[in-house]
Amino acid sequence: MESFRNRVDKNNIPKHVAIIMDGNGRWAKKHGKARVYGHESGVESVRSVVEGAGEIGIKHLTLYAFSTENWNRPKNEVDALMELLVHAIEMETKSLMKNNVRLSTIGNIEAMPPKVKEKLNGCIDALKLNTGLNLVLALSYSSKWEIVNATKNLVRDAIDKKIKPEKINNELFESYLNTAGIPDPELLIRTSGEYRISNFLLWQIAYSELYFTEKLWPDFRKEDLFEAVFDFQTRERRFGKISEQLIS
Ligand code: FPP
Image (cartoon, rainbow, N blue to C red; front, side, top):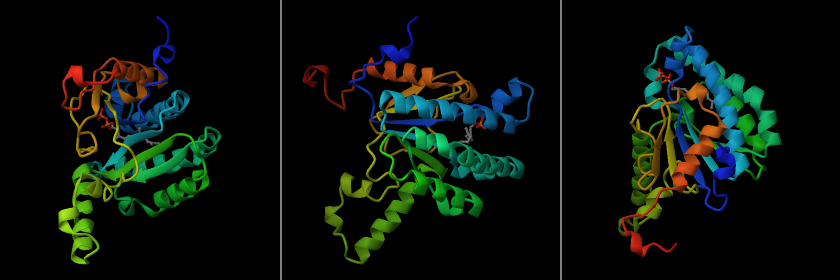
């Protein structure tokens, strides 16, 4: 079978793809290793998918790397994930630069350990002039946190008379979200055979196509991303209209 890379329609590439990277722990268990080994192997998948996304012209790739709820994991796993992030940023900045990738984050970055923040800021700064893929890491992120936070800031601005309540609409509300300025993802992928959204981009996925795969995240590679994009391209996106109303 020909590679999905050659089968995807280059004129219909989603601008924004979001991924819930799941199954690292189960992958490690399957291989008789500690959970952290699964996370380490997951970094390989991140590398491959970031490369692949750039190659087919995806503009924004959002990866759910650490959720607000993940803080409740055993301390040794949280510490290992933070270490891994620092290490991955150190190791990958050069190749991200070579691939013209920009880096940004969504989530409560203030909650991240100082070392992670420092590395992230260094990397974001080093890559800020790049014009290719925007890699968005969701860190200490949850959608309910984001929406509550946006509401807080919006109410504050209303009290300060910077906005009028009657002017509040979708666009204005979106400008208060962490994803302001980034188009909503057309495609959301979740690995590992779980059929949940897990508090990820709830506002932004109102009309996203959802793609679930049994593959565990450490087994996921760019070819799997191309397959998901190919599948996306076979779907009819109606946005509440009927087929006949769609302009082909
Ligand atoms: C979910 O698998 C994965 C995570 C909570 C962490 C994802 C992190 C990485 C892939 C590595 C670092 C990322 C970057 C961007 C460099 P799980 O632990 O929930 O797996 P399980 O459901 O099988 O237990």
